Length: 298
Image (tube, rainbow, N blue to C red; front, side, top):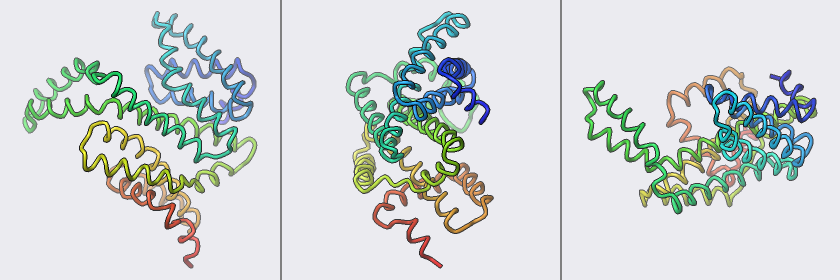
């Protein structure tokens, strides 16, 4: 995808064209939305927050035109700005100014946590907006399955509806982080080869963030509150990234064949508990310094 990055860096109009077209493609193929956000991040990292904001504005105009011509719904562009491009621009601006991946991710996560609390406080019935399509899915599953009753499916549906703010916030956070990482890698390839790998593997979120995340975990466990469960989902995204950072660092420090990294990713995909274990381990990293301990083992 380096040819795409080169095209993006040629100018703001080229960047806006890619961002807008990828955003519209995202309506059919959702991952393309985060590729469009990576465009905003790359321009912001290389040319500064002001250029990134101008590119975002041009992208909005382009997305509005495309969405009007194709779907007769220009408001789609506004949704992209709020949910994908704006968080990406904020994260990129922070990273460009602080040169700290940890600070950028922490602020991004804090905004996601705040968004969850605001949604629960101001729109308590947020999940009910999706009740009708979920009812259809539940009814179809009940008709197709003999092992799960309609009542059990309804209970699961109620839980999902209550959890939707956390699900949406954690999904957007994860996507924004992917956009940030992709654009940071593009930038490193052109201006600092190998720099992103070093930066990612050295990611350290610090003790204060770990304490806050652990408090959220304990409150979610003992309160059973849906709000706390949603906050836990958001903080788990941040510490999932920290866990992967540690994993990549250990593989690199111990000079282990990269094939094992692929194997571990597959294991985490099929055995989610393994990722949960790594996340818990990442909570303790600020105190035990796993990377240093591994590097000192002969």
